[in-house]
Amino acid sequence: MTTVRTVATHEVVSAVYPRPVTERDEVGMAVGKAIDETLSRWSYEVRQSRHPTITSMRRFAAEILDRELADADVPLTEEERERHRSAIAAVLSAFRNSEVMGLARPRSRLILINERAGVYAQPDYWDGRERFYEMKSYAPRIIPPDLGLQMQLFQCAFPGVRAYWAFFDRHATPVVPRIESAPPLDRAATEAVLRVAYRAALEKGLEKVLEYIDSPVVRYSVHVDDPA
Image 1 (cartoon, rainbow, N blue to C red):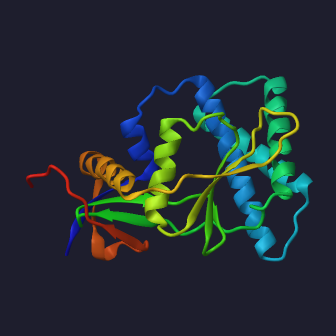
Image 2: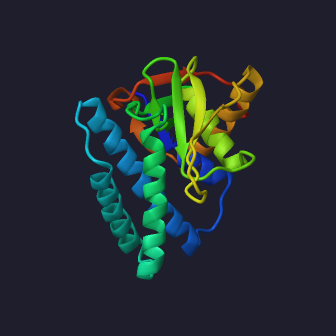
């Protein structure tokens, strides 16, 4: 049996770009979770030839928002909650008419580096063959380094598939979908990302038996300064 150390993509990003989580971050994560879960559910229902109303999806999102805020123990006034519910509703309306609507979430893949370290990677949506999308409910003018690393790991996990950002800025009025292609990874960039991921997995990862891992495995070999 082969033992490997594995981490999730977000753990690699956090290891490379650590930062404290503020109450504002907690609220943003709760809103993001409500949006992500609702859109994933909505796309699934559409693929099953069911068409829930946008009202029911707004209600579903509001329930998730309340749950996440309670779990994070973040107190908000009813006025603040309503403001976030309105922003979520605007994202849902924009998503309904976008090219991402109805797409599936791909299975998580394991980036296996040098048969020792693995990173689980799973973007938000894909068309099953040519494109994958990572969705954000905000729209930075310039892609920050942490988001860039996240996308690069997804690109390593899905080689040959074109990568796109799907921005739905909940802070904007109106919310307008913005689909942007991510630059392809050349060999040097791929190796640099893999080295970063390799170190993070060995330092932070949990040991797993490779033969028992169910996810599709994408193998890479890269030179690292690793005497072991």
